[in-house]
Image (cartoon, rainbow, N blue to C red; front, side, top):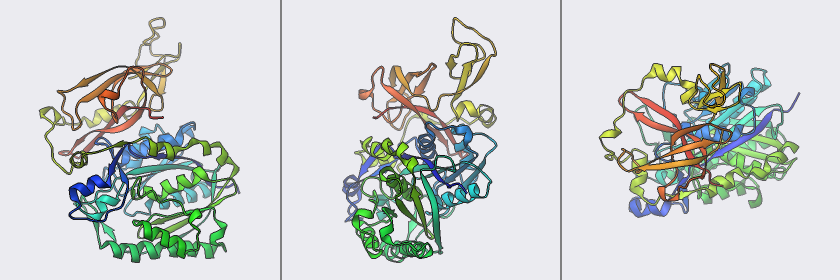
Length: 481
């Protein structure tokens, strides 16, 4: 039987970083002795769904979306409690409609659970290629240790049998109703028991149990692995777990706590991507997740990894950053601190029938391309915009979401209501043709210039709290090489 495993991967880390010194300066009187470094935090127009789309686009770059016949989304912070996020993500990624979609939630190990379910589905013949996106932006109450530790991020993996870069060779799961974290229907912030209890009775016991059981199950030893990765809330405890398991420091993957933070269900999958970036053909790598027990997964890296090793995704994501120097602005961006953004900030009722009819135009950023002359345009047109053509009703779908472009012109609106004024707009000329006005994000006015390269990013355009609707659309972000 052909190997089943990872065929591609993607990573997304938000641009903004919040130094833990900034948090300590504001709230340190409540939580002394926080972790060093910084954590990644979403922009005001980002959430778990938009990060998952970004990671998914990274994963599918250069691949054929039409090959995907399954999409799984793992998160403890989905935008909706009842409305499948995986279906929204699949639409945004312009995946086929005749695919399986499913949300995995309720536990921090949901990401690895989605990976194992994808493997079982492919092995059983229910699908050939499945995309798995894991994303989280958990909220710790201001002044809590969770606020300092939690970071935001996303990872995506495609599972299949063609071009496997790391085949899944085995796994072991431990399931326990451990009372560490919880959120009920009306909870906004993560509730947690005492940190030492979680660290010593949770991470320090469940992760070793899963890893040791996997080693015993497959008759392996610690020395048989090139790298091992697992999440943990404490750097000292993280090192202690590896030492007790018999791993050398050189075998243990850095937990990324000081540069991203603990990113929930995405944390182990980001660590898996980090291991793949450095892995060599023939390497064995071991991944463990934590949450209501733990799961351990054993991969063998193949020769196909040479095709993607040079991508340096994580390194570029970590290097492309901007410090968020205001703790108050962070609170406002996360909706913790109510702020006045003006009368124009009121959200008009969403026309749900319209968003359904135009879902490919809005969510997938699909325009049209003239069959006669090849001219693309967004939004889709019946009449070709090429003055030398003018063909009528000779169009085919053309997706702009994965196309780069350049800023033809831009403007700053200091009057428009915005939580991050001024509101920036740009006329974008797409590579290969097509032009449209998009809002610009993840940038400041003084850094913009005509001709600057941009890429498209799905963002939360608004939140209609009265009606419980998250409105999404695409914005342009400067390309940070």
